Length: 615
Image (tube, rainbow, N blue to C red; front, side, top):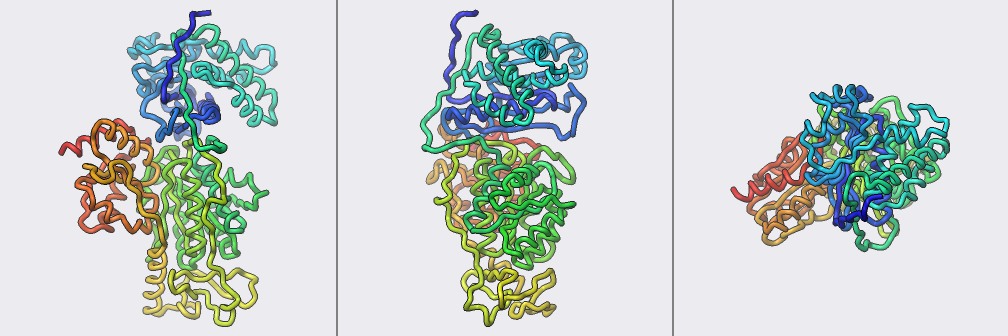
């Protein structure tokens, strides 16, 4: 037993788990995130895995990673670089070392640094630590062999035993942070409820990893402690963006008193929404996995016509295929929520990576004059509110709505306070009333909002037909009259334009900023962190982050014209900047654009924004 360890007390720490695609890094990272959220830390996570279904074992292209940022106070991003790096094989060390701080602690499984492993990872010598010039503390442990020794009496085969390697690494990390393993035990028993032997084996190994660190001090002279600060009272959980989106849909259906229907076709990275909703039939949720994208959208439109809260989920390529059906929802003026979890494109592109390149597709990517409200979620936990808001707009304004998230937001997670639904606004669909019965037509509208009234099949006296052919504004019959078509196009556009949305809020140096940062959607945490860092350094910077993209907030022009310098930062080649130029006369911003399939790096944002300030 070594001497008493030094405990480093930090406000925030970043841990990155990395290994082969089959090494269970996502599971280890998820469990550590749950443990941290349970003890009261705020968290932000970033799962990063290859697009290959299964890259060759030990290859550089097959490395999977999971980064989690835990903090005593609020954290907004998964962090730029990590304080602890777990590298389960040589390829992981080769590709992930660039993410380690100069003061980081690195954990490696020496059993996966044999000559064949080093060759696959393109190392030239048999000493990768020396070859890479690694000066940080390295915990080099024969993890694979210790796992096999730990499970020798379980009767498990060699392959099954080695699948538990990730739990040894997790146990070691839990020791480094003095984390209680009870949460991990409960998580594993629940996950492997139908395979109790597997659950107990993993639990045994996680304790072995913890004990290894505790008994040997694992070649380091310190451990870490991240204090917890008081939070708003309530129950918290670690939640991903996709799960929060699913919960937001369920909450909106409950608030509106409707059944929820999701028609969907599996596609990365949106499929988890379908998976999550399919678990909740007891809450009045119906899910249909369709044979293709257009039928996923079409079934949802049918459910909407029948009186359900209807949604369909997909990613960029799927939106292309759904566009004809989305237009059907526009012309029939039926409520529908279309969830686009953006990924790298074009075409198949980068299925497991994240971008904001579908903005113009969401705004304009349909034939004809086809206006749709567009909302963009700002963080994994914000997906709940964004989904709820999208449903409220769709139901109250009888329109399809596009909800934009992205791979980073959807797969990432954060500590989420379970909401009280009583605090959310009512959802009041514009149902027909008995007084309308004698003179009802399907496109009879509210004079103030332009919203048509919703008559459900089976309501006596409200028989009507909807369809993809243009309809007469008075009778609802098919019409090809030029003046009527002109009127209907304008009515649909005006209805969307009249939708009330909150003003965009400005944060930071609101009154006297020398630079305004503008963004939308899932970049919020990185842009906010960059603003905070610059203001702490004595700069004067503000941030205006947009959630409602169509219609834009009424104060958009006022905010954008208030500041001398404005930079629009987005993960595309300038789509939002171009859209704002179209909407705001005389607006000529600076731009920061990246299309890497990866989240922004805060330090790079700070450098770029500082350069703009100095011009």
